[in-house]
Amino acid sequence: MTDEDTDRLSRRSVVKATGVAGMAGMTGLAGCTGGGDGGDGGDGGATDGDGGDGDTDGGSGDGGSGSNTFEIVHWWTAGGEQEALQALLEGFQEEYPDAEVENNPAPGGAGSALDTVIKNRVLNENPPSTFQIWPGKALYPYTDADLLTDISDSVWGQNNMKDAYLDGVKSVARAGTENYVSVPINIHRLNNLFYNKSVVESAGVDPESINDPNQLADALDTIAQETNAVPMAHQTQSPWSTVQLWETIFIGEQGVGAFETFTNGDVESLEDEVKAALERLNQYSEHYPEDSGSISWDQGNSMVVNGEAAFIHQGDWAAGQYNAASDFEYDTDWGNTSFPGTSGVYSLVIDSFVYPTNNPSPDLTEKFLTYCGTKDAQVRFNTRKGSIPPRTDVSMDEFGPFLQTQSEDFSNSNEQPATIAHGTAVRPEVKSNIEGAFASFLESGDVDRTYDELVAAFDV
Ligand code: GAL
Image 1 (cartoon, rainbow, N blue to C red):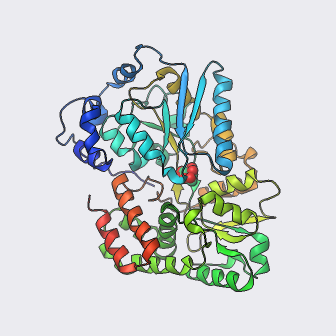
Image 2 (tube, rainbow, N blue to C red):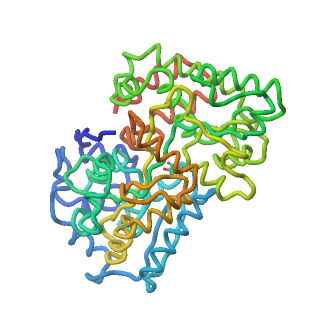
Image 3 (cartoon, helix red, strand yellow):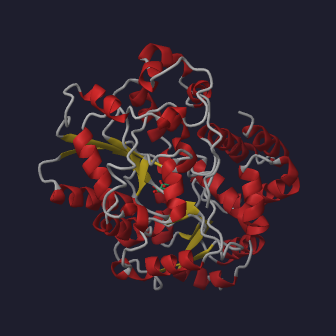
């Protein structure tokens, strides 16, 4: 994984990208970015400054440590995710018993609702203490507009973080700038295929022997013929799960090199390949639940738990939900394999927390972010979340057999691409165009038109 794209968005394009051009003038976004009125800020201008303290204190009104209420905004209300966050907050409060936590979720898988909430609050200079966001390119609009505090020393200078974190993770935590602006808390793998063991066995399907996305299409047909179960518990209510399925099929068929050519925007050199993965999606779509358009990812995942569905493609947050379910055990009731065709690949989905400027609780925010960088926090959180820790010095003893296997797969993986659907690989406005293309594709199944829209998606 790399995040070397230091080609920064101009402040003007940030406002455009975040879809808030009209509001910016009214709410004083320009004011809180500090400095000129917006030509091209150029590289680094937004984050080089040392204005962090000034910005930080400015919003709290008391110029000091700020409120004793720590407000956190996130989208973890599903499956094991809620438990993971709860465990993290409990650990934080054990360390800082006086801290009052305002737990303020903006539910919606893959941040489908959080984005708007946060943008509006940041623009109104009323951010929460911290919020959940993917590191890497998802952070660019914020760093370009100087809306995140530099935590290189205050947070990353503690608990040996700079030595303990993986290099690739440190790179995305800086979001293409010189400074650390976020604290990654986990590493999820995206390219999984989860299954209900008794359903696949009753159909005579062996998931481990499915070697490529085409063979998976055959296996789905077999499930449909041999059982009453839904072959693939895919949700289409929101396009992100289809974006992630497409990108994973694409890697399974074409490899990571071609995928990175795509994420760099050279879509036209890949016309046949892009279209082939769209055709594959059309094959799979015959095997989604009838109500796929009205369910969330975790409702789809519950179908795997209940034996109503055979397979689901999801990040390993799905395993967090299995862990939280009763009587649904790894290797007995459910299994997992790397998505067909992607065995040496570990597609990374990383979550992080940030320190917005105009912070209502500077002292507690710094403490919380520092806590997230500790071994204790990463064990509490990741054991429940279905992810592995981004620190390299955390013992896996408490993680159970599934995550121990994931951790071994991570160590043995040859390639660790960042993903489109989970914000790290492409800038937010590109991601949003790609999601738009897949939202129409879900309606039409039109491969040629979707290809054209994917070409245009990078035109920002
Ligand atoms: C991802 C996020 C995961 C998980 C998933 C489903 O974007 O990184 O932690 O929450 O969405 O909502």
